[in-house]
Length: 162
Length: 192
Image 1 (tube, each protein chain N blue to C red):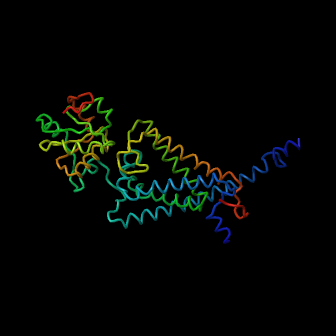
Image 2: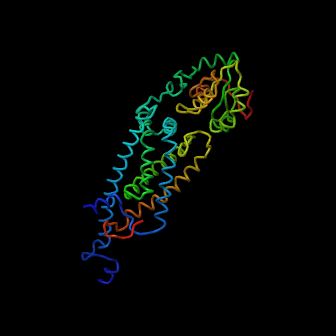
């Protein structure tokens, strides 16, 4: 039972490899870095969410309160390598949502201050650049998802883990 | 035939590859475990986010009013909005200065006559000049374009924070100005 419990939290990327470790640490660092400004300035982040003009008004503050913490918890778990299947799924979902939101606004020609990394204005980063960057973030997340779901991840076999 | 089936890893019935079945099983087990774990992650994040918001010195309200009247307010709570008619009256008397908060390219395509281009995205580059040159004897009114555009409000609040009091926002200014059939100006000059 104890073994099972530990496996449950440990999850499994049973094949050793630098790529998996690199992807995990890279994404973890990105998520933790991205959420610090948002946690420090929730009002600013709420305005950034509003500027996306996607969510109804009633969900804007709730998103600004909870989303940065989803990123924080996700980033920490990625770095520590716990709840691996869950983090892989959540990372892909979250990045797809971000990517879709930016792409949607790019397609409809809305000029917004992204608010992805910094809640203050003056970044002046172009939307196309943001789309390209989010696409780059998606690659390691898909890689992790593939590793957690597409392999024989039967826990408790004692294989070397990352 | 048997050899081919072995090579392909097919089971005795030849319907599914045996290895494939095993993989599918472990994949679905990993997926269901992953979804549960994702649920745990979200729960922890919600508890942390909610708790953090409650212990903040100024918690964010769970649900806020994002209507223009509320969005365009000074930190003191005073509304920054100026009615279009008031802006037109001041414009006719020459007692108003418009600041166009949109990107410079949009300003060049057309703007309110006499407006200065102060793109919010590049605000830092304009601060010193604004503080030196903003007139004291005219009402300064910021505008951008669109119901949801926040640039004008951001610009007005930033100038207020820098100590400039006589500043207002014309909500959805560019569209409303044109719809009212008022004169417009083109080009990249500051027009002052």
